[in-house]
Image 1 (tube, rainbow, N blue to C red):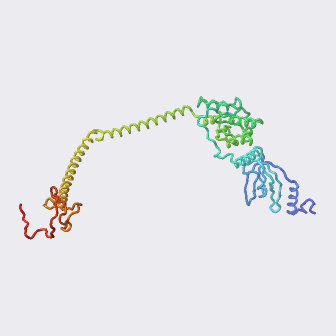
Image 2 (cartoon, one colour; image 1 turned 60 degrees about the vertical axis):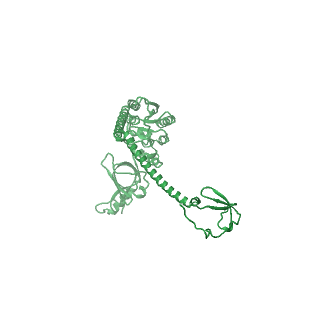
Image 3 (cartoon, helix red, strand yellow; image 1 turned 45 degrees about the vertical axis):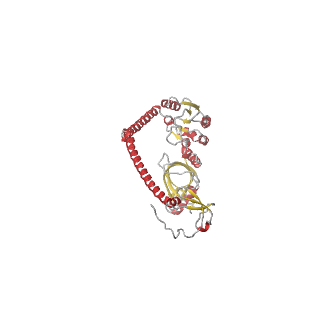
Length: 417
């Protein structure tokens, strides 16, 4: 009988004992347990690890199948404090007890951190934290909008340090609850009011640090979206390094403390005056150097002969001009002389070829009354009126007997000098 208790004479087989243990464990069902992950190892999509009690020295192994792991909303690691829904599972073949994980989540702050991380990832995917959205701060803000608790240390730190650095700076104070149920609505309203004021150059949201619970309001989605929609540059000065609120990520500048915010928003008047003096000194040195260089260059130009004794230009050019004038006159005289000789020669040729020259040698021109030149006796019958043109003057004559021989046979022409 398997239901009979085992005895020395009738012991149970190991398999019977193992099956009874498995059956008893399976009747336990599921249970929520809390502990610390002391071992976390993944293999083939499944996770095998160990969960340790927070106060006692007790540890159980657990298994997370890949189908369950895909449903987990956050990453887990060794050292995390978790709450898990487990179902005990006894492996008969190996004789081991393990917990099959059905759900797992971080404990307390872990839950809040998990939700905060999901919100951070969602807002980041929308581009609210992109560096391209960050607006530059004004170099010298005339009016600073300050969102902080009334009479808080953060308010005093910002105002004191800002006015020490630049006494002329002014503040537009927007008091709001910086923790508690009213914090989100009041801080959001204060940011929107200051953003709508054209006199405000930059907005600082300041709080003097605090624990994570008190700072959760600065990660509220409504407040974050109001800060993202702000057109005025916004500085987050929550003063908390660990577990940074989401306002730090969406702000145009994150300051570690309110004092740091004042120093980064307002320039130091003494530093700026020193920079101005240094700039003036550099400018003066530069101008002095330029003027000295130009004076030296002008001195070098004045030392050149063309400027030291400018009359030498006139003297040298005067000599050149005199030489050129004499040379020009000489060339003109030669040209005129050559032209005169040519004219004389042409005149001689013209005179030798002219009718007047022929007349001067003793010839004459015989013309009829109509002006026609007589070239043969037949042109001038007897008693024809003729005009005889001589070298000097002309004669009127009448033709006599015509003859074709210009020299009569009974007469000889003789030259009488």
